Length: 88
Picture 1 (cartoon, one colour):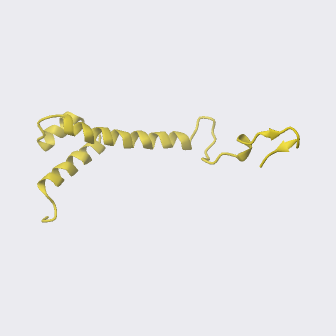
Picture 2 (cartoon, helix red, strand yellow):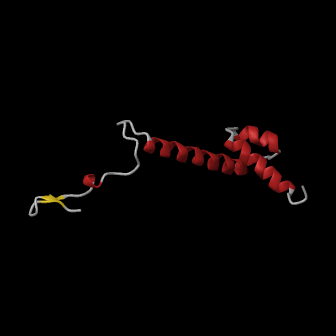
Picture 3 (cartoon, one colour):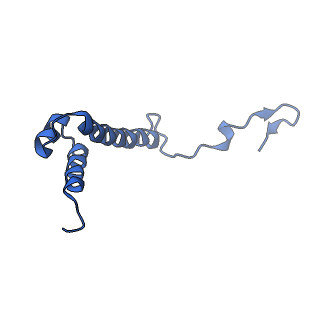
């Protein structure tokens, strides 16, 4: 693989291990890193992606059973007492 550097392959391996749920210590053991500082970047980034997926999942399937992301305009429109109907 002439287009790949050793550094790039090591970084890719660390990132994929983090995305697979490996601990920082496991990644260090597999990639040969001596300190946890750089490895923590990979694990934090992978953790953020997982948390984002979880958050969106909660938004899509809410406990009240509503499954749509769109809100009805009636929820945000205040009634105009002079006209007796909602302002659209």
